[in-house]
Length: 383
Image (cartoon, rainbow, N blue to C red; front, side, top):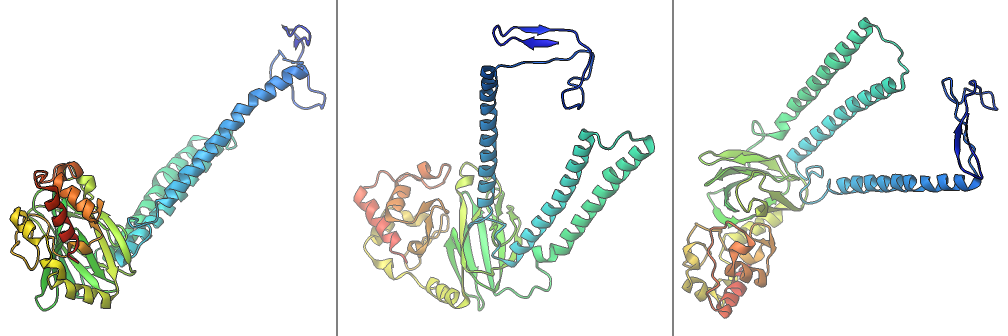
């Protein structure tokens, strides 16, 4: 036997026949040697104290898991979430996601249950025939049936994901061209009416809208997760996207294909409005802004801003850069990266490359600060 003396704390081992404990249960150790440890009260306290860090570690791990799950669930909502759909097509995408997640969860739980049973040894010996059947049914038939079922369900949803045939003529056609690193937007309305804007899109709720998607430089990808799936924008090719917004709100869409240095700084803001409000919005966009002749317009033209930008109602008519007509009514500046204020407009004029690396707009830090301020205030006034 092995014993620890309370006074000396010395461990001694003594050979002794295998015996059972006092309650008559199973042997203390399976073998010819048994180990008995007589621990003093002080030693027990030491052992108890040594267990505390383990418990604290478990609590810490549980808290980390709960925090991770909370953050994961928090990310399932918001302006840029495919799991909080506000469009018919996005609802089909979310439905497909949950179906595949459920199918994958069932398969994973089944495998974990089988693995736990095998580890605990409750299955007992398995002959070759049983093992072969387990591999055949569990490793071939069931996974294949699950994959075929999920694929069939996805194909069944496909008309809702890309509704072109028999979906009705679109009420509004919006041509969106991806550029480094902004979005050129042209509205084409019934009756041949059209107007231009940039980086922000307004949609009518309940009406089908068709997007004509293009690119002039590299591959971009147009994606509004809350409204529809994504579609690539490929130079020399026009792709189509059709969607119906079902809720009012503001949504955000990133460029979903790496397109250069400021790829992460290229987003599109989308607002869905009731049909009557959308009609009023389009009527205002057809006309020049009331503030187009306010002080600052002459400085805009004097310093050559019209060589790259267009402002409705002025001599600035270039289409090389974003259209700045009605800039003051937009929610953001620089394709969704800055709040739209005179201060941020001034900062962008002075050093655009510091805000958006790789932009084609040159710096105008050589201009007098008062001129920059006047131009920024004028642009903000273009409601």
